[in-house]
Every structure is written in structure tokens, then in C-alpha cells.
Image (tube, rainbow, N blue to C red; front, side, top):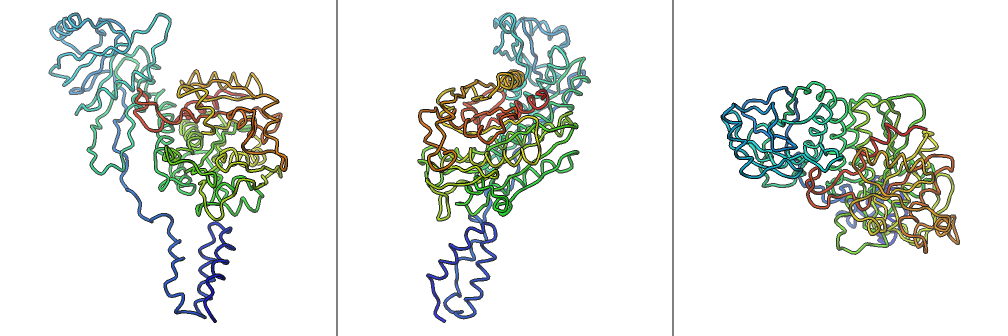
Length: 547
């Protein structure tokens, strides 16, 4: 029997659609053929596809340790001291002797320190403290101090101190807990792949004051879990796409939720999606050897219907056949920021034992070009039987969300649905790096989201839905099309596309976070890289939005 290369190529094309099963099936074909032509197949290279990528991980280290957070009524001996003050006067509980206080007051007067927000002044060290720094907290009349930002500022300013850090001057327990939260986020770093890194000091940051016990209860009851959720989201987004892909994203989530009460995790794989007819999410991932996944994380901390949080999880977006230009494409490893946000929010809710019932729908796929990738002009079918004409394979986030939303509504019967995604460049151009775009059919639903945004500090700005924009997404050959929706603005067209898969009577909010997934420079709460946007917002919304 002659070895037929054309036949073997046909087998590759035939079985490629089997996704994760291609290698075992193809191996059986090769073995059968090898029995007839052993010499011709002795060095068959196809078996190398057992390994995804190079098979060499970029590193196994963890990020360097951050400072822990503690609470006490008195400053630990030997700790550097950060003193928060809204005036030129030192707090009464500042740990100074009479002589030290007098010297400090003279220096304050000489340097003209007034305690205005943003001012800092280093004082002379004492025998008990290797470094003492004043941090101004006075704001314009009527404004409330941003204690979270103060915590981040202190953590960054004192990061090099080879000692613990004591923070003095917070007004009450709530302020102390907020400062602790800000310190946890402000000292974040992602340095696990730096081979020349040096470990930063990791001694504890201690919040000091008479309300320390009450502050610790607040910290442990909610703030610590919320910080953990944000850090998890940042880590997922900062990881390169050769480390985080659909399957490994799920592995990270399983590890984070392991042992957390009242949590269940369900996963649909590519074969499940084909069986159910979920052609939108399966289609986005068909050009990649890594199949799509849909993960549902359910936390049941209360009875009744859940709130559903759906997140776009494109672990890398080349644009598919409609390939993106190279400039800035590296940032497309973060096109799963919505998925990271809903996962981090569920982690926060579950670990803080919030009295809510919530489900995160995490829609995961890798959008790659390839011989089996979907094409512009293809028509695909979703779980419900609705059809979509593909005009651009680079409008893929709305596709994975369409099936994820339909499946979640069908299986979980939520009382409300919030989806979040790095969806459109249009939202970036409209709002810049200060706001995520908000869409809602009902004013009351938009108001609930904006209230959560105000409380969490993650800003939203409402953009319009309009019947003319809804009409613009209609297709000539299918129900709707995923792109080319002129004259609808891009962000509104994307919102209307997603709305098409949300039942009309279901309260719904769409958040396009494309402009805010990364920090714009260094801020008090975000030293750089991924922001972890959405975790605080969704945590707040899930706790307070009721049907």
C-alpha cells in the first residue's frame, strides 16, 4: 500500500473539528496506516501536537510577597510611622515624647506643612521609629476623604522600609478598614517572571487606633475578601496568553474557590457546546487548538433567584481571520478582563459570606486564525436557535456572551443580568480612561448600576440605546449581524447585539469596560498593569440590587 499524503491531509481536515479529541483520533489513523507503510511514517511529526505551544512554561515562581495587614491600639516598636493629619497639628495619639513632639512641631512650622491632601513631610526619626512621615488628608470643604487612596499612597511611599509600617490618625473603624483595603491594592505587583527581582520588604502594615478591633472585624468581614478578588482579577489579566487560556483560567478559578463554602463550579467544554447547539461561543474558539469553555460559578449565600454576572473571556484576541494590526496586539491578552472581573467578584462575595445568591457566567475562548477558523460571511446558530451573520471575526466578544447569556438564563433563571466586557474601541474613544460605558433599557436599572459605581469608586457613564441602532444590527441573510452596523455607534451596536439575547422582561445592564481595564499610569490603588476593574463594582451591585 503506497503512503498517500493527500489522504492523510484529508484526515487532518476531517478530524480537526473534533477539537480536544483530534490527537487521539488522528493517532489511531496514523497507527493503522503505519502498519501498511512503516518506513514512510517512521518520523511522523503530527504527534508533536500533543504539546500546546512550546511546552516550556515561562516561570514557576509566585509574585513577591506583599505586606500583611494588621490592627492594633498601639504602634509596634521599631515600625516606621505614617501619620495622617488634616492640619499642621500632630494627632494626640502620635507616639512622641514631649521633646520629640516639640521638635516635630518646629519642623512642621519651618516647612509650611498644612495637612492639605497630597502633602507629605518626613520628620526626624526617633528611637522607636526608623522613619516618620506626615500625610496630609485635608480636602475641600464638604468633600469626604478618600481613605482607600490614602492607604495606597502610604503603602507605596513606605514600600522600601525594612521594618513594619504603623499608620496613625484614621478617624474611625470604617476609615481604618478602608485605609487597609487601599494599602492592600496599592502595593500590588506582578513580578513573577522577573529573573533578577529582589524581594521587597514584607513586614506588616498595622492600622493603629482605639477602634482597631472594630476595624479588624470590618476588614475580615468584607474588605480582605474584596481585595483578594481584585488581586485575582489583576493576576489573571496580567498573565501572558501562553499561561492563561480557557482551560488554565478554569484551573486558576478552581484553585481559588477550593474549600470555600456554598460554591459550585460547572464547566461546558467544546463537545458539550456542539451537542447543545451553542455555535457562537464554539465558533469563536474553532480556529484555536484550545477549545472554548463556559464556566458557571454559583455562590448561594441566600435563597431565591440569583443575580447573574456574565463576563467576556477572550484569553487572546488576534481578531481571527479579520486579523488585528501588530501595534498594541500584545494587550489582547487582557481581552478576558470581563471574565476576570466576574470571577473576582464571586470570590469576594463567597469569601466574605455575603447574603446573596449570585452566578458568574465566564465565557472563555481564544480567537485565532487558522484553517478551521470561522470566516466573515459565515452564519452561526446560538443555543436558542437565533442566527448571526459574521461580518467581522474581530467582533467576537459579543458572540461568546450571546451563548453564555442564553445558557445562564435557561439554566439559572436569574432575577437580573449584568454583563461586562472589553467590547469596543468605540467606548474607548467616547469616554477615555475615566469611565466604563453603561447601557440599560430601564432608568431604574441604570440608576442601580451608577449607585454601585459611586459607592465602589469604579465610574460608569451611561450611553444610549435607540431603536434605530437596534434596527442597524439586522442582517439580510440571518437574524442579526455582529458588525458593520452603520449608522449605530460601535458601543451602542455592541450593546444592542447583546440585548438581543436577553429576555425583554429581565432586568439587564451592559458594561463596556474597554477603556478602563488597564491603569493609566501609576495611581494610589493601581501601581500599573491590569486594574482589576469591575470586581468592586459588581460586588457592590450584587449586594444591593434587588428585584
